[in-house]
Every structure is written in structure tokens, then in C-alpha cells.
Image (cartoon, rainbow, N blue to C red):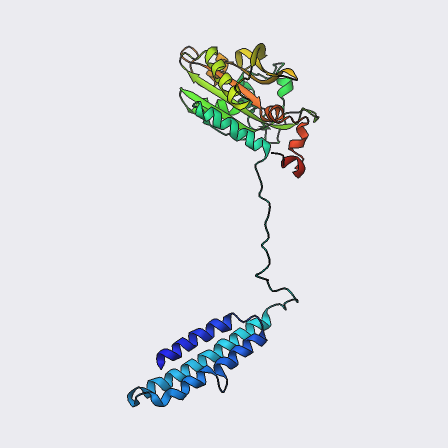
Length: 326
């Protein structure tokens, strides 16, 4: 009998907890505590209990009855305190579920991931650095002193504390050289900032990926081999590259690299060159013992060429119709 009372208490508590309103709760209460309810049926069997167990059974009857009354009273108070349900607000289990469209990677994020995967397979490690930098890391250590004419196109946004928003991710190269010894083989993706007027091909904020390789006996031929391997995997196996002499203050010799497109002809995609000895010295590396190459590409630039996007501003407008194409 005591076991039956415990099962009764458990079932009554479960059903009371699932009652959605006072009407349903009252029906459950009558089922268990009514004059002809389940508790009354079990109580009527007290005479069947052996005399020596009758006292314990009676105590259990009183305890279970009090417990059930407390359960129903508590659930009644909970239902009264809950906000009223609107008609039709109960969930319909027969209705089909609501499905939300899955998001996707932003095209610039996808390009960064694709580029970093390619260079990772070529042995490069991915390194990131701060967007707020010192003048030394952004200019002086990169062989761009205060009076250098190239500084005009790189001069960026200055902060009140004397620091600035970096204009190139080459600042990461300086940080890596200062704390690491060759061999060094890294790429550095991230945002950069320049005082450019915004138009279809320019933005005051864009993304760059720069690479650096320093070791003994590194040559321009190594640079060409790495860039050819990247371009042919990223743009296709038949990709044609052209190297043109150029000037960058942080590399010597320097080159701009063009990519050939059937309809557009040769288009510039990145700059590169052998790391200038002054930059190696600024990074505490002996240029008599080590040499290296560096390259840098604009993420938006190669994304526009890869996907045929004609206006850089589309990447930043968050127009879902544009983003869904990728």
C-alpha cells in the first residue's frame, strides 16, 4: 500500500505540473483527491493492511494527502501569477517548423581565408597585429622618415595619444622581426587606413595581406616562385603574371605585379620586392647575413578581380542582395 501511495504522489505531481490552466488543474485535482478519486480508492484498502503495518500506512496516507494538496495549491498560484494566454497562443504541434536561412561568409572574409590557406601550404604562418600603431612601426622602421616624399600618400589618421591607425600591415613585419630570429616566413592580414577619397576603387579603410620571408640566400627568384604559385592556385592554372620595376621605400629592388585578363588586359594586383637593408636593421636583423622578400596585396582589389565587382563600396554597404551572390 505504501508503494502504491508513492506512485500516486509521483503521478499526481507530474500531471499537476503539466496543467496549462486552472480548469485543467481542477480536473486533475478531482481525479486524485475527489470523493471517488484515486486517493480515496487507495485509502479504502487500509483494512487489507496487516495490523502491525496499519499505523505506518495511516501515517503515509496523511502525508501523501497533505503533499498532494500542497502540490495543487502551489500549481494554482503559479497559474494565477502567469500572464494570461491569448486565444490560439498554444503551440500547434502539427504545424511545420520555422526555418531560417543560413548565413554565409562575407566575400572579403572568404578571400582572406582562401589566400591564407594557399600561403599556409607554402609554409607561411599567419600573424596579426594591432590596428593602432606607433609612427616608428608605421614609418621610420619601414625606411619612411619624416621628410620622405612617399610619406604623403601613407599619412594616416592620428590619435590624441600620438599614435595612429596603421596604413599598412607591414607594421606586423617589424614586430615579428624584432622578437624573432630568422628564418621568418609569415603573412599578415588585417585592416589598414589611408586618407583616400572614397570612390568606386578607393576607400579610407580597406584590407591588406602582406607577406615576409627572411633567411640566408633568399633571392628574387624565390619571390617570383611564391607569387606564381599563389596566383595560379587563386586565379587559375593558366594565370599569367608580369613583373614591372617600381619603387617602394621598404624594398629594393621593387616591382609591381600585373595579372592578365582576357577582356581587360594587364591589371596590377600587388607590390613586392627584396626587403631593404635599412628595414632589416630596424628589425634587428643583420643584412650582411640575411636577405628576404616582402609582398603586399589589397584584399578588396583581388576580390574585385576574382568576382567581377566594379565598385569597392559594395563590400561595405551590407546589401544582402549583393552578399547572397557569394
